[in-house]
Length: 245
Image (cartoon, rainbow, N blue to C red; front, side, top):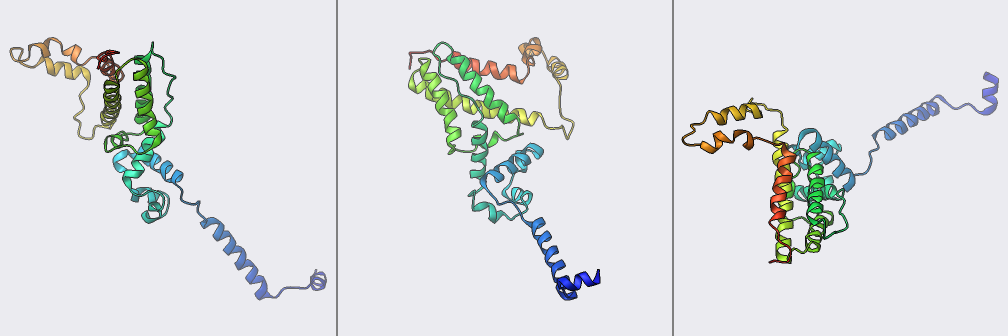
């Protein structure tokens, strides 16, 4: 073997050591190479954080830490937390399917769009709070407003009533979803009260002062969150009379 190595040209010990060192450097570089920071990665990481810990835990610093970078690296892609919130709501709105407006089914169609949006919000605890914080800038979010407005107008609702109703529906979905997310939290201080207990507490009230609360305790506590969601939007929609201002 010694003779064959000599015939090919043997490298020196120093050259051999340099080759090994270069190999280690290459491996280290490969391990340390990170995927580039993009808006998509920032948004995906933010969703993961909200899903795991809730919207209150979401900060630019937390997102940066999850991406193993500094907050300044994020600001090159997302200006601030408000813009990140807007992007998140836009991503959820983009997953809502808008129907072809049908004047015979306009109330049902509005309810369907609102249900879809609610279900998207409920996937990420507390995220609908971002929708309540300011005016949307995302085109995907504005698409929902346009869709609701179009459905209402197609149903014969006047422009002013349709404008206010679409805004009211969007606000109600956001507020309902936020309240629902609060109820989903584990009760840290033991203050949670189930329906049976709430009924009993209502019935303990002095009937002379709260006659109807005592008499209709079961009705006041009846229905789950989805039942109440549909009822409230139904009240809003039934109050809209097509063809009137």
